[in-house]
Structures are given as C-alpha cells and as structure tokens.
Image (cartoon, rainbow, N blue to C red):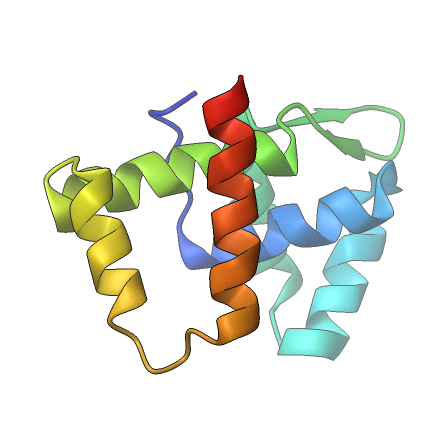
Amino acid sequence: MDTLKLFDAELLAMQYIWEHEPLQAARMADDFLELYGWKKSTTYIVLKRLESKGAILREKPKYQVRALVSREQVQHAETANLLDKMFGGSFTSLFASFLSSDRVSDTTLAELRTLIEEKQKK
C-alpha cells in the first residue's frame, strides 16, 4: 500500500467518500459542485482515477461508490511518501524537523512521549 499516491483532489474525494459511503457518484458530483465549484465531469474524472488506482469501487446500479482502502492505509502510504521524498527515509530527520517547529506545545510533547513509551513496551 506504500505505493498508493493520491493527489490533492483525489484525497479530498476520498475524505468525502469515507464520511458518506456508500454513496451515489451523482450525489457526490452534486455536492462537489456546491462545495467546491467542480463540474460534474471533474468529479467523475477524479472517481475514475481513484478506481484505476484501486482505492474505490464504483458499481451499478447508479454507480454506488465505496472505499477499498481505509483512511489509515492512505495515511500510512502518504507518510511513507513524505518520509522518502523529504527526509531520505529517516524518521529521525522527520521528527527533528517536527520538533523544531514553534507549533509544538508541551501538551503535544507529552502526548508524543506517551506514544513512544507505549511503542517501546510492544
């Protein structure tokens, strides 16, 4: 699953699908027209790309859409892509960059510490 690469429009569509599945493609196209100003053809093109990547299944009647990959699978794949692309595969470099941010609060650090301790116990 690490090879699944979703572009921004595809990720937006997947987030919608995870929240509303199963759903009809026509409903999604109507909602995306209202929410984002997408033409129906744009929504259908994005759905076709997701289907060709194996991320969704569209089936008749009325093109019911459902996800074939979970949010967690996509998060792991996207994280792996980011790690390889920006940090040469190094978790240490990723966390060093993260920790150097001014947006890291004491609460976040405590939560991370707890997660690390839990991982070490496994």
